[in-house]
Image (cartoon, rainbow, N blue to C red):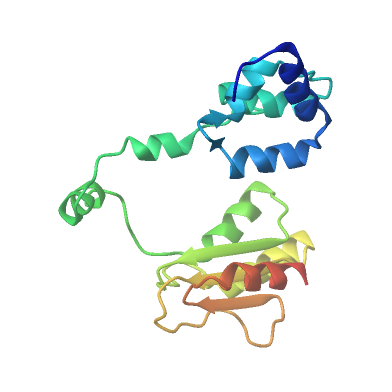
Amino acid sequence: MHGWGRGLRRAVGAWYAAAPVEALAFQAIKFRARQGWTHRDLLRLAHPEMAEPARRALFDWICRGRLVEEVPMIVHAFAQMQAEGIDGAVAATADLPFGATDCSLPMRWALERGIEADAFVVYTDSETWAGPVHPVQALREYREKTGIRAKLVVVGLVSSGFSIADPADPGMLDVVGFDAAAPAVIADFLRG
């Protein structure tokens, strides 16, 4: 560009002030810089009007990197992690308290505390019953004592074949193995 006179600043500022906020956000993300100029550069030189809160939030994000709300920037935490080999990962998890999987525990816990739940979803490594009560019995007891027709989904993350759900009960589902379709299947089951 050739110099930044008053007319050019006004024209650039007017474009930023008139463009729909959604379109500006798209432009800011898709075209971060062109010919050495960023949206941040243009906004700082043009000083466009920011009457709308959404436009002000977008300009703050473009110029200062501020989000509408303060949220933890977990991506930065991951970027600071040290690369660890398999030996380090095994050492880090060796002393964690792993034990048997009690798939009835969520229902018993909710019942003991008077918590109303319409669904229980248990994720396990396919070890499915190591408690004092079978999960089907725990769910039936929960239903009887609360009057809530709660559903149960047991997700075995490893496909080793198991069966907890009562096949005659339409409110129970076993998911064996886990792929990209599993969350949608579980959500559809719980909704309907």
